Amino acid sequence: MNLFEMAALVVGGGLGAGARYVMDAAIMRGRSGAFPIGILLVNVLGSFLLGLVTGLGPNISPAWVSILGVGVLGGFTTFSTVSTETALLAERGRRDWAWVNLIGTLVLALIAAAVGLVIGELFPR
Image 1 (cartoon, rainbow, N blue to C red):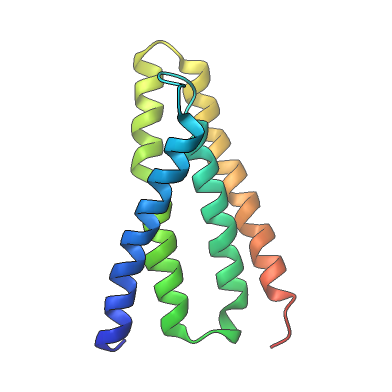
Image 2 (cartoon, helix red, strand yellow):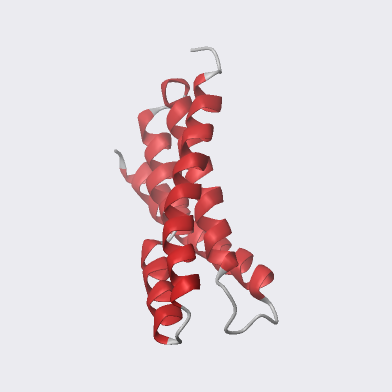
């Protein structure tokens, strides 16, 4: 990876993190203390898009797969926030929501990634 591509990866990570914040904030506006649906949707969308980029991989240069996958989508998705939100839900006595958040994120993100991968692989090589 050359210097330009590395810079694009770093900038992409920042853009992805900014997009995560904006999407989560828009979804969660006025829902303080509620189930963290915003981060759940961010991670499901990010998993779908990473599956799509991975499926399209042979049609895209390896550097751009990294820029989009590691940079933009790595900045967009977040495991640490899921972990923290799950722990906070459990701490507040909402163990039911904590399990839904944990298992729901895992299952929905896995399905979304698989669907993105299949769609990406449909494009001619």
